[in-house]
Length: 121
Image: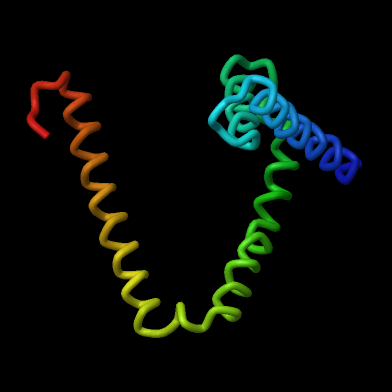
């Protein structure tokens, strides 16, 4: 019985993703369909149209298999060993530094917005 519930919930999640893809294509939206599908799910959950229990097992199943989706990244690193060389280390450092800069900038902007724009950024 639990397997049937998981399959139905996964179908519902897939349907929302497909609906998001359809909406992105028809409405020429600049967002990927999967993101629109997640926004649809969020809206349906927020408005209590779908209760969280109705998608809980399906989401847990997807999260259980999430590491499998990172296998292509590992294969890419193996296929391109130059990324693991000194040049690759420099790229990783650049990514870390720019990520930290973005986090600090976002934190400053959000704290300024929360203060009503009274703080200087």
